[in-house]
Image (cartoon, rainbow, N blue to C red):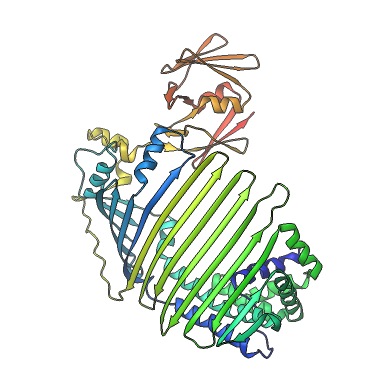
Length: 540
């Protein structure tokens, strides 16, 4: 398997248009391909992700969710149809500050609100909660709220949010280092697949050409491992500076020493086994810096016995003039396995420069699973402009005008005679796994008041029990020599005629009986462990 390690790496880079610069004399056409790649990378470096203002809008043009069977879920899907949200923002990433204002339109009615990020704090004004209560009337709020509620997110995820700018700069640095890899790759491409005509350079590959190109590239790596390892070390260093460039290079060279490179027949066998087939890849770039570039890709996945089949298509046109770039992307993905199909399409128009960007996109997804069909059509708009001296106004919090959400414990709220269970003490959904296998329920298990409630029929049957509902308020469970009777709304139950007590009574929800999961541990011979948001059940 080791021989395929570099081969798979090469394959991934080949499809992305990015790979391996040696000392070879490059043809004029290959030099232009590399120069255009360098120019594309330079266009990506801008100020918009540091200090900027902008907006982002989503609209659900159409939603048909055939997999939803519950009336309340179908009603929710109906409300979402035609819904739109626009989010306006101002951000100063170096100062760790962002402000947001949103307008949510549901069934023709607008709901507005604001929130803020100040270092590790998420700050939400009172009016935003009240607007949400208009949208969701069942949301319970206390009679009085402070002017602001905040939540202090002191965890790595929040730190990563503000380090996004730094990580993005590292990503840009890594992409910049990929120029060396790209040059190495272009050097290896057989000249017959690159041509110059009418002021543009064209790279064109099909499956046969791809296999020959990959073999040529692998042979180049075998012939010149020092250059390949050196370029890869620069990429690794830009992504993770925890080691030195020399250490990365030494590791790469050590791996290459023991690598067995696949032959042309083995490369072909890989594609036959996986079913991957490159129908066509055509890349056009202008000879001059400005002008029209384009990429067309058709990548097919041929079905193996019992396996999936699919088709990936991409059409991209990019027109550059001075520092302004306009373009379109049309991405399609079709996937089929057994009686399940999925069809995804994305169309995007973009217009960006060093200081401003604008984009509109439409996404369509159709999924069919047997007789159930779902259809989603979504529109997205975004724009942003760089503002080096932007000011982000953040509310000043005081003990009198604000409260920490974490400090609002249910006991304290009860002492203040406030009922805010709709926000702070809501039921928490959990996953359930039996002996390492995830179980699925038509009613979601949940935790409330420190008790995990789970649909008893699904779980008991998974444990080999026979479950029967009697008279609407009794549930009978039989396993081996145990006969259990439970009563809806009552804490007592019987096992072989002997009375016992549950720590919470069984309840009905959407026609299903839910019981405390402790009952499963005590009566059906299991051990229970809560890990994060997953209840793990193990049979003894």
